[in-house]
Amino acid sequence: MTEAAPSNLFDLTGRVACVTGASAGLGRRAADVLANAGAAVVGVARRAEALRDWVADSSGKTAAVPFDLSNRDGIGALAADVASPFGPPDIVVHAAGINTREAADDVTPEGWDITQTLNLAAPFFLSQSLAPAMIEKGWGRIVTFASLQSFRAFPGGIAYGASKGGIAQLTRAMAEAWSGKGINANAIGPGFFRTELTAAVFDDPERAARNAAQTCIGRNGEPEDIDGPLLFLCSDASAYVTGQVLMVDGGFTAK
Image (cartoon, rainbow, N blue to C red):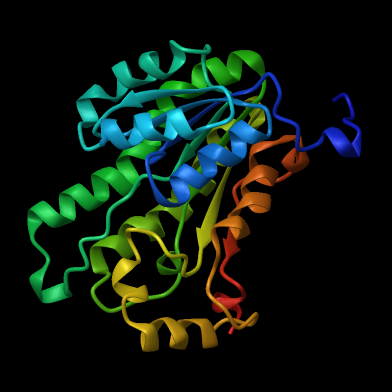
């Protein structure tokens, strides 16, 4: 392996990235981080207008592919679509997700199925579709989004927690399957960041303060807190890191 200079370890110039959930929240932040690091970024999201707004606001090389990831049968075609603007992706970041927040006694088959499809099945089948091109190049990065609920049980989170527990194991399994062929698979586990998925938490100041107090650092996450960990896992800096869940939670899971 050719050694990269320390200053080049995080440089993504010449790389192509696909980011799902790029229209808002941490997905949009991830897409911006990779574009600012030099990657050509294809954003995928259901909301076409919000996705186009991201492209318009981006200062990097970006393209939008509107797609509803709950359509599992269309994921093969999606892989071809995301390769169209800049070529096959070297990096895929799975940030799209849903949390129905149904109590255990109230979980419906419909709520369960869409949660598992968006949060767990879509990351695998899209990765599976993109892996052959990464293997051909001998270099690839798959980054999934885990959660505090990958390891902790929260009220109203049985379907979401099951999907995010699955993400932790999916990450290890994809590493086992593909890392010997050049693809590193890892996950980021955000703590409490203000996003659409956590709006209910931050709308309750007392609850948000309690969550902050449970971290070692003493505060909830800010969008920029995700930048370094994400760039690490998407770049040459993580060449010998695979099958891991990196918790970016201020030490919430350490207490």
